[in-house]
Image (cartoon, rainbow, N blue to C red):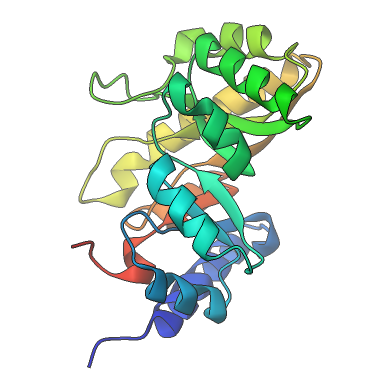
Length: 231
């Protein structure tokens, strides 16, 4: 008999609490983003009933359909995939936090669309911490300049950084990448750039979230451990 979403979620929540406490952190400082990409509505409803409060989606069109279907639920929706500028107008209508801003062009479009809605859109800057050609994100050398350029945009609020490190079978091999993102967060915070709030670090997924929490993650993006393998 397949394990229920409720029991999977409970196990993930317990693991988050355990590693947070062992790292000297308040578990409440780590927020679980349940990644519902390609997951049908019934399992998502089960996850919400079990206590999920934040859902992460990778595709605007898929998210739009789910948000409409689940509009009666008290859920915060996060966009965690690569976002094209031509989807910005939809993204600002749908999402409370966009994790994946990696260019001034995209930021300006989001700012324009948020202004039209009289909304201040919360964003994270996505950093290609591993300099992989296949990954989205600003390179580490360009992060501070990009933050300085985006900061004056009145309808955006920079809340922190996000990264997707290389995949390793051994989670501890990812630690240097998480540590590097945390160092960037501290560097930017120390520069005291006006209108920039470096409180969030979005890093860590099913295979490595415990290491991410040890290194300071405040948002962990977990799908498989909750919903099972994607079909």
